[in-house]
Length: 111
Length: 117
Image 1 (cartoon, rainbow over the protein chains, first blue to last red):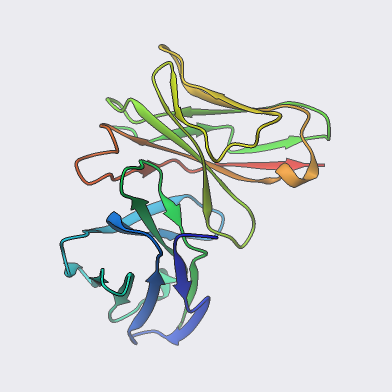
Image 2 (image 1 turned 30 degrees about the vertical axis):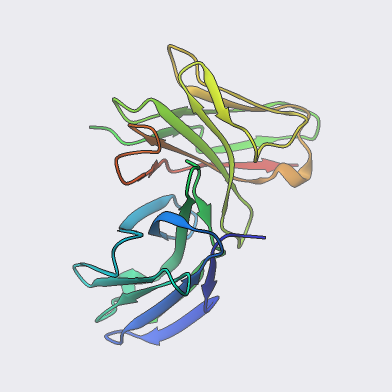
């Protein structure tokens, strides 16, 4: 089964609201990354958080990591229509170079 | 500095034909990863290559699929005798060091969307 699992699978909110997405994983990791994918397009790297970090900010993005619960959350504040996309978490298991992706959260921002 | 480049962006093949997907990593990157994404799913790792070496092919189907990253030129993912189930988006990523940058960041290309008729 997949290393990462996002929750919820789909999220629809009004523009200006905050959006929170969660990710759980199974094995020990070095880092956890969040990516955005617009429909039919490639992946855009958003933010990386290391296993020894608990929280990280980048603009309107806030990522938390709880290694004891093997979970992470991505918060997008003051959402915009342009934030409509699928969001994926990806982990790299210790000792491996490959990234393991979750199924993604499809976020829709309604104007 | 150009990003990861993939071509073609769209590829249509009939069952039984061969599909050849190309990936040019970012300048200075010597590590390439291939991932496959089925509709409405996340990306699944296929293979990790360095120049002239396959490092990890644990996600690659045992038959019909092969990958290479020659000393010169792009990385190639080849699918022989394609079947409808091969229809997917194939993404390439590159990174500059073992496991990427010191934080294992991988930079993704725009993908090749393969449709098998």
